[in-house]
Length: 219
Image 1 (cartoon, rainbow, N blue to C red):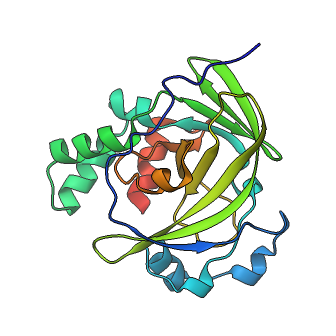
Image 2: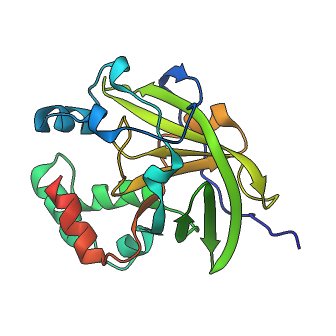
């Protein structure tokens, strides 16, 4: 039976990023120890400052697990402590930060389960599954000068209505297990790369809103 993916999308609102492409990963295997960084390097990379040759292909297994959207936690107030912390140390009010993340976190895909080569999206408890293969990565340069990497996967089979492309961003640039991630999806690879305002964000499904807030404050 055909399943519908209607209503599960990211809005394509803003461009302004320069791209540096890379070919698809040749294999799923990786040597994590070969890509280790010092603590100082990790902080710079997390903030978006790195060299092109530091970026390495990644396998879908880096994001394997059961993940939950943090948008409901923002809506129910469980991230209020984190919002207050950002307002105390940042240059915007709590209300301004909340509006920013309301746009950023917004999604109706509340759960994602990633297995060996497969991704299952849940909307209102209804699953939609497809198989995905690496389609390389793109390096984006943002207006303020820092950069980010989108690791891209293309659908290789599964439910017809599943998105053709998914793109991960998790502040990492080389193989390593993700602790959370932003996910972008759609049918047009290039157009998805233009999305800079809506970035549905997923943390391990077993974490509470308070635990997530404290982890984000640690960054």
